[in-house]
Image 1 (cartoon, protein in one colour):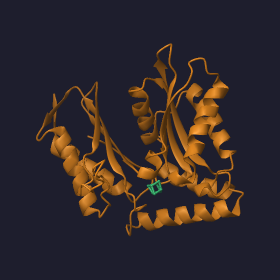
Image 2 (cartoon, rainbow, N blue to C red; image 1 turned 120 degrees about the horizontal axis):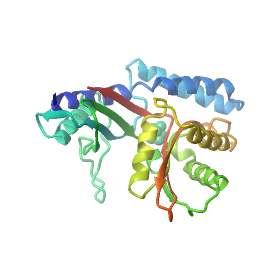
Image 3 (tube, rainbow, N blue to C red; image 1 turned 180 degrees about the vertical axis):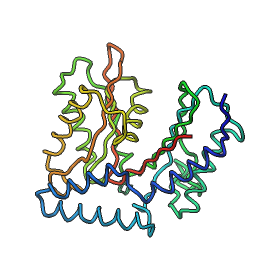
Length: 279
Ligand code: SF4
């Protein structure tokens, strides 16, 4: 067994939230630059220039990417040959997240659901733990803004839906998000699974948007068809018109019940705050 301290995991969580609040993933920076060059709408180009300029200011350390620094989500793949030592994992993750939001001057956004009273420490973090073969700990983080999380959707399509109906349903769900979710969007989509698993798969797809492994040819084809539909919609940057409605989509196909076709659409704004570290 390999021994890993939960405190070391908490430290990684802290560093990932601190870094992702200010630095967009490289794949997203490249997409923004390419979209700026290809955008035919002057208004769209001006907004993309502002988003790119904002990202540069944030990367220089002067301010977070957005005033909404998000609710903290953590996905950990835990090798079954790892023996964890130290405080309980949830506690260590919470501590790392709280330290990041405190020391990085990131806005704490969690509140009581009825009283709407701010809880003051951005906790609790949502933690999903997956046991996998091996002896490593693979940590992924997502700081999810409220505006775009509000617009994420879980659809239950008729199992007889055609490919065209499926694509139209995903495009429709994303377009419904409109300007409220600060387009251009980054999208994680799961087709299949269940009411329980589809949102988790879509979140994972979103976090891994520009990471390996590549999508299968079938997933790639469906994602690209859906992206084309979105970018032909005219919604554009911040919903003010243009061709750049979505910057990227990772789509995951998963076996499902023969009576079901769940589709989870995790909508993220252009401020995708994700991180990954492996111990
Ligand atoms: S949706 Fe994204 S860019 Fe818009 S306010 Fe929320 S975190 Fe910021």
